[in-house]
Amino acid sequence: MTDEILVEICVDSVASAMAAERGGARRIELCSDLLEGGITPSTGMIELVRGKVAVAIQVMIRPRGGDFCYDADEFEIMRRDIAVAKSLGADGVVFGVLDADGKVNIERSRRLVELARPLEVTFHRAFDMSADLFRSLEDVYATGANRILTSGGQPTAPQGLEVIAQLVKAAKGRIAIMPGSGIKAENARRMVTESGVREIHAGLGSSVAGPMRFRHPQLSMGKASEREYQRTVVLEENVRSLCQAVNLL
Image (cartoon, one colour):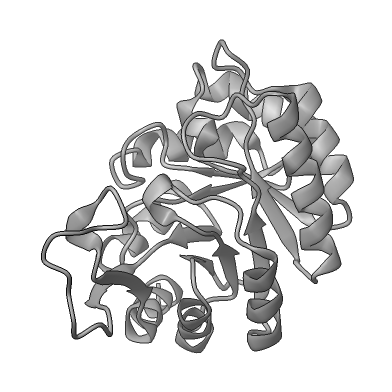
């Protein structure tokens, strides 16, 4: 369908990747550690997901949580991780690099784009953390990236809808604007019709209990102790509802 809205789902497990594909997603963003907003998944994760799904895989390239101003070693890690993602059959990579003043680091970003080619490149929500979204739009375009993932500088894309629509107009078709964060079946149609975007990004994570019957009453291995025996997964039915919402306009 030439008019179909492309739905990308963010996942951090093989099971979620498979559920996203079954639900109708045409692309997945593959990450680890979504509690940190997503970091680079392991080689094993990329390889296994590639073997399990046929839809496009965009691999997150982010060496750590926190801000997006990286030192020389972190930047080298990103370069090496892009090479690994390419070798394992990824269709694209996702990254964002800022300088200390909140501007897009054009020189470093362009180097990563060139290294990633011929894969597609998404500049992720580091864009929303920049000092000036409309200047950053031009800067990201100058790097050669294919698209920008954004919530319009707000906590969620529905909250940033007006700015997202303005970014779409400012992009003038030169680079895709893809809204993400807080998009669900009940608000996705409005996001598409009022902004003019052709791609949307969603997490759709649902919390489910882990398989452990024994639960230690005193210890936790993570800082979020309340999540010790919880897992966040993508459910096929939620992806299907989202895909239907945007493609039955």
